[in-house]
Image (cartoon, rainbow, N blue to C red; front, top):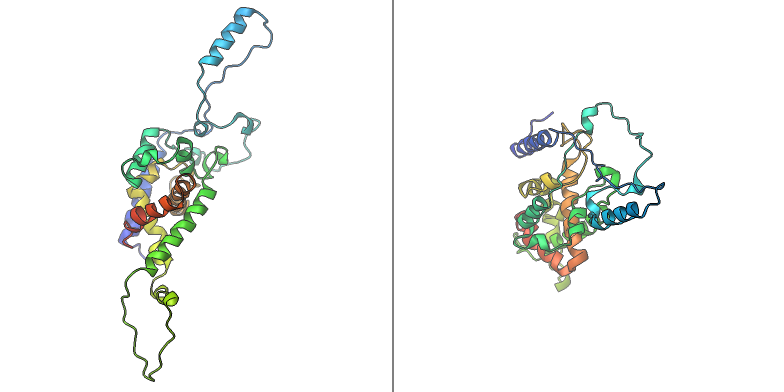
Length: 265
């Protein structure tokens, strides 16, 4: 097997460090806040008043912070893990930490660009809590199409690097204004700019790996668990969420200013 390049070795060491930090203490993703149990036997008015007072004082919990009661199983799991240590994985539950990522990615005021529920949904992978709190697959699909479109536009509007060669037979190729930039896609394609490793490296630099909610298959080896793909889909989901709530024009501007410029396009 060929030796890893310096960039891949740095990426692998970063993933290993984050995996060690996230596996220090077990955190069950199905943690639920205590729900008061109503008494069905007593009919005393004092008991009823106590129940009404406790119910009115309890604030509604945000949707991202708990597993819905009706989506819980019968108390046992059919998912048998060979190594119990692989069940231990810590995810972020601090809104301030999540806001710090959006500020670093979107700039000043980025934490207020999306609604609270959408901010958490965009960074939630379907592997987290078995998808019972919602996940970002459809947002990622929308964001991927927007990024592909803007990357193609950036290639078509880029200056010509190579002058057209002179045909030795004196033939003149057909030219049209609508086709003038098509040949640029021969030299550079969108996948050359939107490389998966580059996007994952950018996500780690922005702190996405520390706020992303997912459950790796092997916590001791994030790269083999698909962390590159999850980082890519999460960044795509953020763009899709911006397009959903703020419109396509805002999402396209974010792609040009916050992603393509960071990638050197």
